[in-house]
Image 1: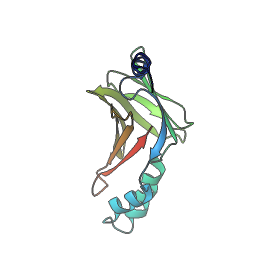
Image 2: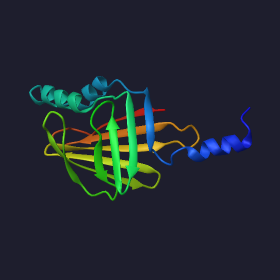
Image 3: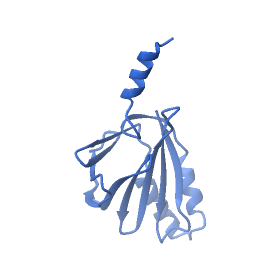
Image 4: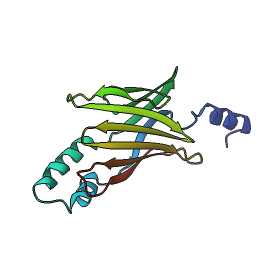
Length: 158
């Protein structure tokens, strides 16, 4: 049994909100989610949409979320961290393959909301930590005028 003073100390050092290092716990079958979301598209646009969505929706084994001096940084797996102003203003960001986005991050109550805007659509990541279990849920929503409906799914991290 952990002494009360030690438990209080351990809880005090837990970062508030989603800040910290997280390891994958569970994820949906993303190709299936994407297939279902694009099923009603015509046979010409459906494979293009599925390819694009599969490319831009990856399950990463780790996520690192940090904040310092008015900046929020998010690192997915071994990719380079993305640095955004903590006030929610957008900044340009270029992915490793050269595609350009406007990205932003802002605190919204107990959640952290990150947004990617591209010329063909938008992705919103909402990071929420359950205070009791300390499980991070990443809720993803991808929208585009070209999609018949949003693509939505959730990934959990510990």
